[in-house]
Length: 173
Image 1 (tube, rainbow, N blue to C red):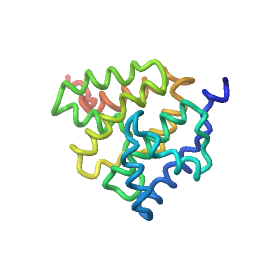
Image 2: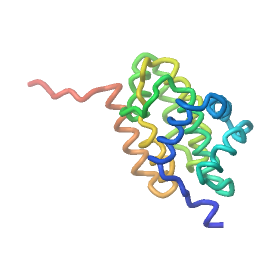
Image 3: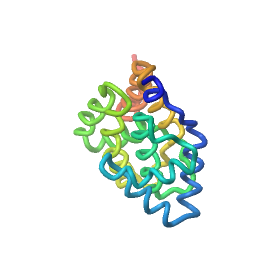
């Protein structure tokens, strides 16, 4: 059963491969765009297998379709450089209700639950922020490690999110 929980994903390989597919293969890109929720993630399976990923790993079956679908729906043709939580925080400045969504994400009990919450929020970021430039490599690494380093990832995301809403200001005497 350990094999079903231990991720076999190399984040750089996955993200680079999906951007290459998105830019070069319209049919595969269309299938990846459809794989954005658990009931349609099977559209990503042929591509996952061709890239060398196993379909037996439940966690990878949540992470890969989420990341692949998000990249396929992205306007950008290259991986971005901005952490997802930071971009989400910028949007929360204008829409305070996003703090509740963020709270639900960081309080997910495991990576699979987090993937289920992230999909709609990544779509929101893509629709609201022009050229958001999400760093999918760092997002993928965080998803891979979430079950083992949950507290550290929650703290990192919280810092990125809340610094975007309330940038640090030095006290004036």
